[in-house]
Length: 248
Image (cartoon, rainbow, N blue to C red; front, side, top):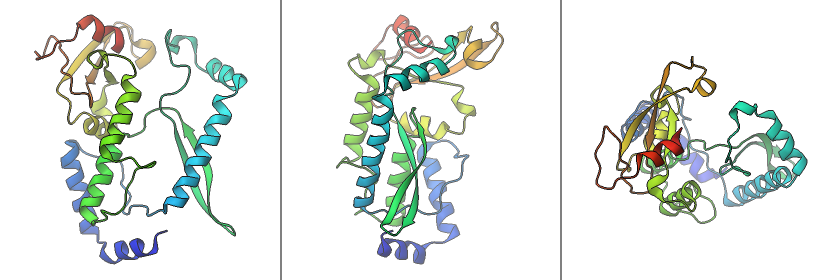
């Protein structure tokens, strides 16, 4: 949609260059990327992005401002999966748009809306590697004037909130077997500690028999805090009781 950038990219593109791009990105993440990456970035004007952001806010507000919708949404979740101290509003929301050429210009059309973190760490690495590989330093993947540092701080604030970072753990069930593992690895690349937690009685969460044990991996991300576990000594110890109470 930015013709000059599109023409330049198409002119310089090759399958070999794309393969090298993916290989370098995998090395930065430290794990294989098992889903397909687009052969090309999307070159979108800021004016279009602002319109999509406005539309996303309007769609989200239409849902979250309706008490009847929130009550109906809560009822969809089976009682066994409801949290006693769960959020009343989602911390993260993604709105996916398709783009349609109309007589008035390019417009967004809603595809889906998801209320969970979706590759928030990996996409930063993806954008950084694309800028390095293809040389579009004048473009940015961020909205609202953010850059890499301010984006990471904003995501960190959303995750930590008012809590002590030493007592905040992002936990994933068996992340090594999930295709979103690059996101977990990219997000945790600068963390000071990683730990494994073996938890019994997660049959409702993992569809395992209650007597089996589920292996989960946790990482303290972005916040410069070293967690303490039985298998990894640390310089700054957080209580194991705090870790278990927040990760189970």
